[in-house]
Length: 165
Image (cartoon, rainbow, N blue to C red; front, side, top):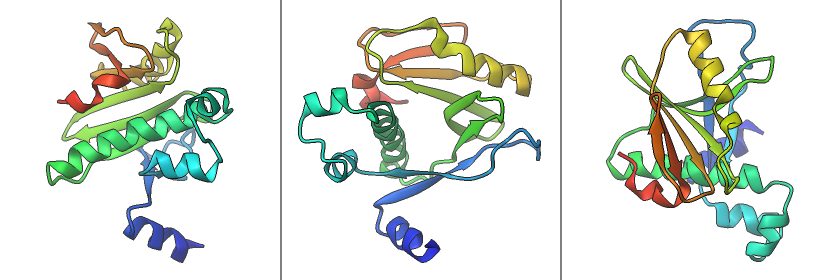
């Protein structure tokens, strides 16, 4: 199985997102998460033919997450950089979809496919900040159009992902 995964990685079909951990805390789940680079391929494999199929599909949120993470990867690769990307998950359920670590600065990115922002989207960011004791910058990428910033957290529309700093 690992030979197939290596082949798919070398072919830029999939990538494995490793878990983030500052230490070997037993609450962390240490298995990597698998993502496709091409959400079109994902949709084809799932027999999603159009936007209506996608909007009604039970994996819509995971496909959206795959798309957003792929956009961050492309941004780094287009600059000739490897992306220092991870995810965070506690055994109790709190999860950060993407952490980009640049030196001592961690940017946490929470991804939600909903078209309306809900303050509950911030819960995992707050939990991560509490565990780490670090008020790291955060981004919530969601399916809506409005954008704003508050308390070191940028609420960002998926449509502006091409403008990632």
